[in-house]
Structures are given as C-alpha cells and as structure tokens.
Image (cartoon, rainbow, N blue to C red):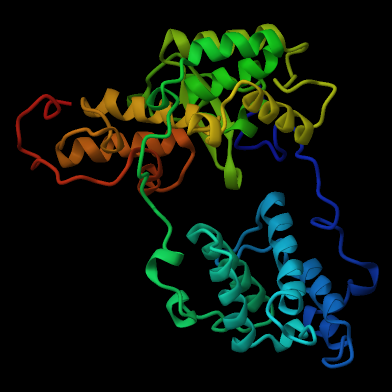
Length: 379
C-alpha cells in the first residue's frame, strides 16, 4: 500500500477549474511580477485585464501563510474579485471601474455598504474581506483593508459564530439515519455507502466520494502513530483540507461494516466510491440531489448531509467526556477531560486546532477543577 505521507497526488484528482492552475506564460518566464504588471500602465490598461493578470500571477498563494490554496479557494476568490470590480459600477455607483492598483478606501466603504444593504451573513463578509486582503498583498499594500468596524460594521454584522449554537446532527432533528439510508440505497447504493461513511467516520461529502475502501485502509503498524495511541488493528487514512492526512481508527463494528459495504460496491482494489462513469463534480452533485430528493435540506429538515458528520463527532465527545456535548446540553466536566475530548473531535474531523471542535460541539463551559470527583474524573 502507498504511504499517504509520500503520495504526491490526491486519491482521485479533483476536476480542475479553467484558469486556476495554468502554467506560467512563455513570455513571463524571465520576468518578475512587477515587470509584468509594469507593462499595464495605470489609466491606460483595461482594469479587468489588470485584475486577470494579478489572478494569474498570485491566486495560488495563501493570504497569510507560505503555501498554496485549494482549487476551490482559487475559483471562489477569482469569482469574487471579478464580481467585486463589476459591482463597483453596477451596485456602488462608480462611473468607471478602477484599476485594481488604484483601489482605495472609498471603494471599500462603498462596497461594504452594498453588503450591508444586501444583509450578507457575517461569515460571507469575513470571507470577502479576506479575499480583498489577499488582493492587497499581491499589490504590496498589506494595510489596505482595515478592520471591519472601520467600515461601519457592527459586531453582529461581521463576527462569525465560532461555536455551534445548536445541534446540527440528524438525530437532533428527529431524522432516523437508518431509515433514510435504506431509502437512499434503493435509489443509489454508492451514495448510501458514502453517506454511511459520513455517519460512521465523520467524513466530509467530498472525502466520502473520493474514499478508496481498499487503498485507504491500513494496519496500525503502517500509520506511524506511537504504540500508546493504538485504538484498533486497522485505520482509515483520509487526506482532507489543506492536504492534511488524518488516521481514523476502525474501533466499532459499525465503522468496520461501513468500510466492508464500500468494498463490496467498488469494481477494483484501487477504485473510489464515487460512480466510475462520473467525475468528482458530478458525483458530488448526485449526492446532493439524493439528499434533496429524500428531504434532507436545511429548509425541509433543518439540517443537511453535513449533519451526519456533526452527529458522529458529538457522539465521540460524549463517549470520551461521559456527558453530552455542550451544544446538546451537557454538564460541566474536568478541564483535562474536556480538552482530551475536544482534541479527539478535532482530529477526527480533520482540523489542526483543538479550538475548531467548538464549531461542532459548542462553546467551552465552566469546568470542574482537575481534582474534582465525578463520573468523568476517572477518564
């Protein structure tokens, strides 16, 4: 089996988005970005041509770190920036579109007012400001985008809810997981198997479709984890967001059965669970269609397919802490127990920070001191 730490490509290649990963133009080979942009004189060059040049030169870069970003982020950032400059004319009232290099505070203030009128969600506004900070860094103007409050945004308009406000799991919304999966199986067994992996292993929908049930299962000895962390004989490895690899122990019969089902459906040992005749984008669309077909939407059910993942990690927290998670109304636990449970949740979900667990299980509650006795103090 190929070790995921040395594998250079994803289990299956995501469908490339035109313009997000093009090779450097031949005419640019020996030129710096500054020299390339200098050919586009401010006041003379088409602003959209300047923007497209900036996107082509820099859009692979992360805003704050020395790394590249995913194809999804590249596509979303490029789409937003193009729309932003068009909206300066269409929505913000500017007679001419500015050269991106001449972008100023009057433009940013005007567009924030547009977002306020449109009642955009705080998370959306934060993302848009992040994309603009990326653009500013490409132009060597790191301080161009100010704090949200400087644009007249109140806290409620730009602060994300870092912690889950309510339980998003299927069980919390009265949905019988097994009943829905039985119905989906009649429609498409592969989609049902993907959803079962989301339910038992907390996989994202994309991860479940890309899952290779033979290639992505390894004995504990191949994981590289220390012996004291051994929880099972076999582990699933998943390459998630940012290329992070995580190992999920196949501890329960339910987890092992979900992998066995996936193996029974694929056509070869190196096959992924998505339908072999469809590319990744169409497989994901078909999964989303199945969820909608059987009523699992925010509007109809109060939750989405992602709720399977939420249910798994909330159950995981409770199995470690001995009480329900905060978002499920759980009581206080010892500090070290809560910390261990949150770390386990973050690891299973594929996040690098323990704090990310709050998005699934809720805010940290007041704790019992570490010496307190109770049902969780011995864990």
